[in-house]
Length: 106
Image 1: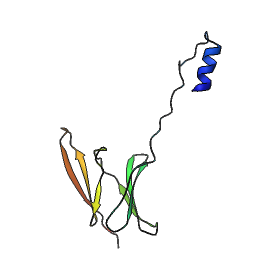
Image 2: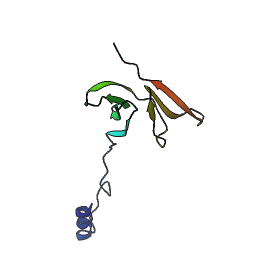
Image 3: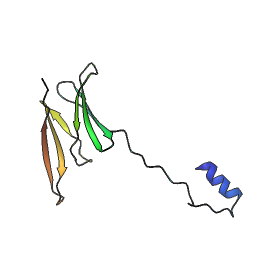
Image 4: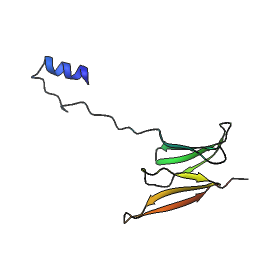
């Protein structure tokens, strides 16, 4: 913004549309990272349709991925014994704990 502000100071009569540069839409590539009790890394990654969980073993191999259910962003999820626990908010604003099981595929 500094070069833009300096240009505006040098040429005070210049009018721009829009008056200030627009900030491009963006979001973080990752929303959360955590390790479970088995040493697996859980990555809550941004995808086009929201977020998904990607699970990696200790050697960094992708074990699987799944669409991430909507959750309250201020409370981090927790994983233990293959179950993910997260706080969710229903349509009436009531918080509850959602529990999801990590099923390994044969």
